[in-house]
Length: 396
Image (cartoon, rainbow, N blue to C red; front, side, top):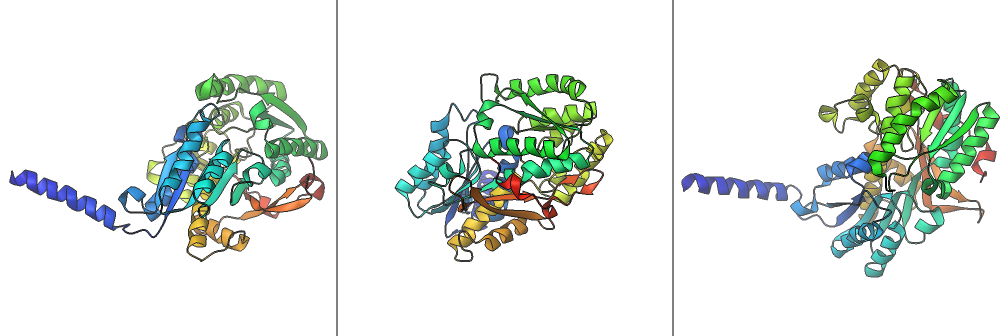
């Protein structure tokens, strides 16, 4: 009986200490991400926030929920997961990243319940004017600038052909379709051949596994068709891992993932165990770089040193926190960059409000960002300092 009493007391004490560590959070921040299988980096970003600010369940500040992998056919589940965060009266900020289809409607319903909640969207998969109709603020990777910059970097790495891999759903998104158009024009201007290859949508009947298998089987034939001096690029996170594996095996080129990160595809493609390096980005980069070089990708494969998805989840939550605390102002980019700097020391970032071609004006609610590209075995490419010709910025 005495042992049982001591054991029970120990459990109660441990629970009390865990709660006390984050007791009485003045407000809560809801964070919705996809699962590890669809977007590991954003999921890990939510884990980083919980580590710093604590889980609501233990008296902390962060409430993390996940959205379904097959989100295109389970949109109501996505919406209900996001809207459910507003049921907590202490929630003052909701961050959704990736802001998959359904986020706009979810934010509309949140605002119907609670106008006081700040709704932030990371990497929206709905067009800028759609997501900003309900979101208070949104951050997207700068696919306008990158449309030129990725091609420019590919040329520096010796690419003669650029192979763009995607599917109809992604090509229906304004920013992704504009980026493709810019990439194609940049290839013409810089002397590269542009090729487009279609792959299955992971949200279709074939699922993630089927879409990944397609890439594994097709890349060798594509390399044979276009040559080893071809740079490959795909628009889907789940397809990045098999693409990296085959690009290295076939000796082709890979500038950076669609949503760049050393965790995006690289660990799985090269069998890298990063458990001991979790959260330590310089250590992660060092280990990934060695694996890539050992696999023959030296000077031909790259990424961003800090995950875009991870960084943006953390920065948006921190931005919302500081705004709520009166330490930052909404739409003030200097305040936003400070939030990025907190989580990505030493990294070079650049960005600006999205320019709406139809309205001929900047949208302050929607900011596009990008980080300098690092090529394994070569180093930083100075991308954030490159001057992008005006013609690409206004290309539809």
